Image (cartoon, rainbow, N blue to C red):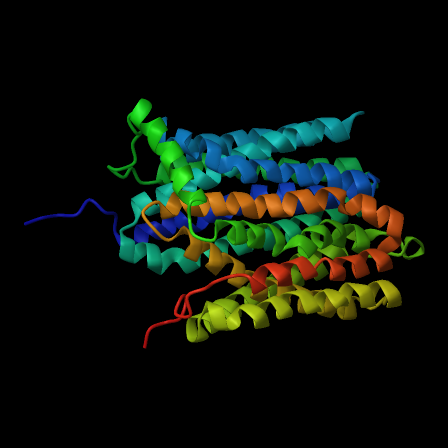
Length: 426
């Protein structure tokens, strides 16, 4: 009688939730928590937007070194090692925050963290495909997404709230954030040791043979991607669809935290953790779930225009908030929920389009290339967003963001999408 080496299905629950929670935490720390921390520490909006936008670069170029994860050691080795490295990086941030030159030193550590996190993404996603049979991959894809989103809530909501509470208790912003990163250090050292113990050892998880054929194949995969039909329009769409959002996202937290005399809403750090980091992320998740559902009913092509409108029109929320500066936290949280729901709903179309573009023999590698361009589309516009806001003020900046939605409408008008793609067959 033939036996299977695949672990029992219930064993997957031992590591899939924790793996994808661990995958989400360093990303949200680098992209969101760092912005809140630097704003609390009185770094200018110009510097925050410019330097934290550069932290997208590892995700932009991760397809370039993804073959190294295949060629050297196992994906299990990479996962455990990188979680320990990320834990050490959190410790370095905790140690350097109280001292002079904290901005320079913490940015350097965030760079290390970003490269480690991007590499961890490659290893974790590859390990998932190796450790689970195809039917289980489909069954657990929702679990992956759920725990990644929970990591966002824990980071943008829980850790931001904790930082604000510790600031009130200690009266020292740097010390409060140092303690938060101490918590993250313990969490990730624990995660690395836990996954060392519980991750399975799939027979297919092994290093690939090195040599010229592998290198040749690497360039072949890239060449095939850039020879896809209509690749110019595809790249324009990938780079421009979130041109407005890329600028907006860098200034949302500073806008919420800045005093009302400077045009902001004057929220406390705890209130930002609740309104934006918790309510906002929940709305973002619900928008994404609904977006996926309606595409499965009607197809991507039919939904493209409604989804881009629902994604961009709610940005008017920020124009209204900047003009009226409401003091009611419920009103602010409700407005943020509307905008984040629309963003989550519209972003689903972007993700499905990348899957469509990646279809073919090398879909994993081509999807990774798409995500690189996605990150580039967020990195470059975000770099100058802080400078623009410092010169325009919040009201004019948010009006500028609305104008910046126009290139995405132009790009989407040129797309060619299979009417049946994404639609569930009946």
